[in-house]
Length: 501
Image 1 (tube, rainbow, N blue to C red):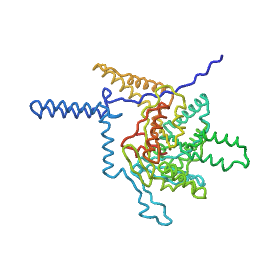
Image 2 (cartoon, helix red, strand yellow):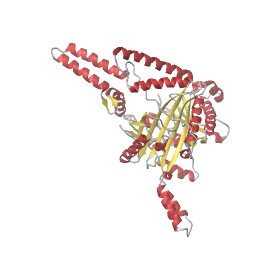
Image 3 (cartoon, one colour):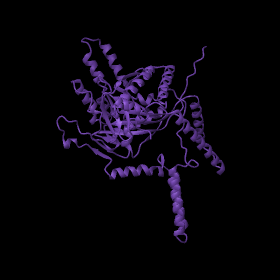
Image 4 (cartoon, rainbow, N blue to C red):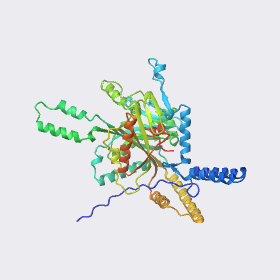
């Protein structure tokens, strides 16, 4: 009997909880320091028994704010989020409504560009890096960070049918793509893959069967097709996958200056076209189908349809009648929105965003996200992962700092007699394992994941949230719903490479 080949498993390290002193975060140290100072002040300011009582009360409140959890966070962790949300609400920043319908538009002029606060730094450039008109690509410019993002559409229709060996091979090829972007000479700063599950009309296939069946078709054969279509729930889902690439012009400023002849935007577009071609070749080597870089209108549609899925159908009808392939780049943004504590509303659509708090801590196969990505739910779902390759020199410096911090903290724990938790020991083991991987020539990557759901009403949104939480458990993910910052978190589901500090 032949032995089965060893199949590699994949394990993610625990999320680091390294603090400043003895595992305490900066916010916890501030809360404790303020409570101790206030306690001493009360002790000296009040006479009699009231001084000690007030000091004990203040110290108890400080301890509660430092360690007592409210939901999944402590009180000192809730303060920044709550304060920021209240400030935006009082300043009117949680509501947005475009004013173009009031101002009007002049004939022959482009539409007025209006954006909510979360997108005010972004603009879609319409440039042709090559002489051919067909070479026009869409590039999202972040004016505050001076970065540029281009997007490729990726196809992999047979991934769910691949064996474990083929999946391992593709994961290895994808790892080589990331390693290629981790060179210190690479202008690529971040990459983001984005997967959307878009519900289709489940009755459309049945209507198509009734309309297209041959006259006098065998009743048993037609009935067999009907039963098959009723069972084929996944066929009523359309899946879109995109890969966004972000360039940092500071890493290739000389190339950009020469290519653009003084025009930084044009030079960055030329460099973007070259990098997208290289990434597309790497993806094809990984046996993935890759389309052409998205044009400005296609990129605008990719963003706008996330806010208002209804526009996808309207633009599809216009395109079938010979119209443009998507909305104007200046109309890629929502026309109205309202942010709430646990949700976000744009036009008539409701959204909720989750942050991946913990990745699988047990060994999983390469397709561990299949349940989350290939759900047959009736609500639109988006999964986004932002990855930032770390150059080898910087990665080695960061890992050495982490090792020194771990050793110093362990000595302080031993001095005060504090025992390290099992989780803390796992974090230290993960740091040591990462250092060994870097020494072996592997690339380090910072990453973050987000999951979003979209529904037509608040009630349907909660149903969609329950579905995504159930599927996340099946994928061994721990999701945390974003509170008080839903509008900004929703932009992490757009192909703009946002989501890492």
